[in-house]
Amino acid sequence: MSRGSLSLSILKSRCYFSLLGFVFLMISDPVVAQISTVISSTSRDEQFESLELEVAGLERQGEVFNKIVQLAMPSVVHIEARKTTRVTNGSYSTENRIEEAGAGVIIVHSNVPYVITNRHVIKDTVNENITIQLFDGRKFNPSKVWGDPESDVAVMEISKSGLVPARLGDSSQLHIGEYVLAMGSPFGLSHSVSFGIVSAKGRRDLELGDEKVRLQDFIQTDAAINPGNSGGPLLNVRGEVVGINTAIASNSGRNEGIGFAIPIQMVTTISHQLIDNDGQVERAFLGVHLDRAFSAAKAAKLGMESLIGAHVTGVTPASPAAHAGLRVDDVILDFDGVTIEDDGHLINVVGLTAIGKVVEIEVFRDSRKMLVQAEVTTRPSS
Image 1 (cartoon, rainbow, N blue to C red):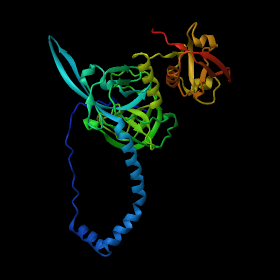
Image 2: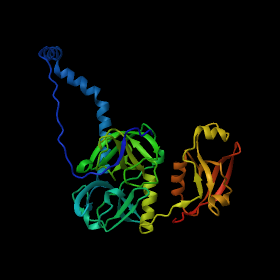
Image 3: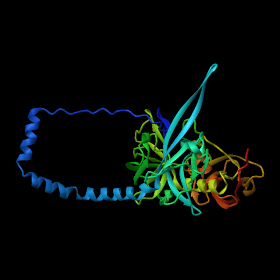
Image 4: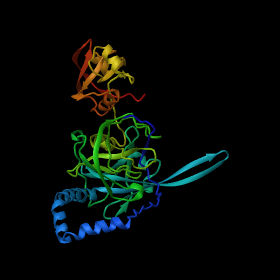
């Protein structure tokens, strides 16, 4: 995606409201008279009957969307996080109290209920300052909170009964142009719904303000997403959660038809690790240095017909890549059955691979394709 002059913003809502103006269209008297003549020339009852037949298909579609919302709504929560930030100006220091609003989705892991959301919604605060509100109005604080800065995924343990977990879909099966619905709390307005399509997949290298989100594989949508939608679900037409709304590209800070959601497969993988490892996420390690400026000209020089894959510029000694025999100027085309688009895509795929898994890697070397195997290890802390 060409960034142009757009700025990318995580979806924070700080309870700011503005009044929207209304524009009235003034219709001249001759036009009104012409409309009246047209309507009076035919029975109004006949017109309504004709209209009813014409909109029947639209009403059936509307009933489908209504059913999606009714099924998903009990699994969506409203989140408020009270935060205090200190601002220092010379010898003076003041505290600013901020209320962030967002949303979350109820899931179950090992028979225990949790809420998944974005880390930026609940970071820089403590559990007792986080309020989770259910669709039925119940409010409570989470008992445990974990977050992963590299993906902006967070998960909260909740000790409550009568919760309705969401049905999770397969984000890898989403198609561009497919209908989706976004739910959340834009500007603090909880359980709001908007509608659109999947505009693109695999959006990476987005600069998300101060958030250092390293693992990126965003779904792009034109469903209206605004500050406060963070952590809410992106739903397919089967009522399944396929993503977690996270960011927007905007010149104004408000919806301009370009929103981004983390694929639910990534969210699930990371949230399960956070739960099972008490807040720790282990990343798989391959041990290659990649060319971020890999171009069509470089690909052609290596003998490739098109620009695809991740270009290796270095191999870490004694790493899985070194043991597999990977070399400088190899181009990784496929990793564990996933066709690699570029360096950022490879980083995501490797980072979400199970530790210790033996994977098959297809590389382009010396003008031909070949296969190697590597056993990925835990990424070094350095």
